[in-house]
Image (cartoon, rainbow, N blue to C red):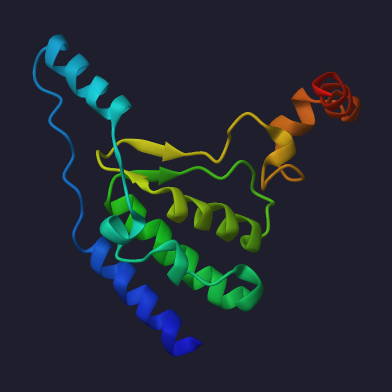
Length: 155
């Protein structure tokens, strides 16, 4: 497994070594607005195309040691940063395995072509979130009965 992970990390390092240039926001407000609209509409490309690694190539967390997850996450975050995508984890106390599985899902969905995106892992649905048990917003905004009442009203 170690040789395989080293190959993934090398592939991610190649993506990191080829950063995406910052978009030209122009010199006028109209040019800036046009670029912002392009960013908002930004199309998705596959993780293989952007980062040289596909979802299928990333092993599930349960197959990795904590040290392997740390190394792989570091390589993923560095490659994404070079491509203009920031990562914002919802809290500082989530285990690395949870963070890895959450970012691994993005490899399945794809990434934005134009730089300027931040992946914050928040869809607004606390119940279906990897970080439900670790997120301060979840603890501050929702009461345990809120989920029960929401589910009953959907029935």
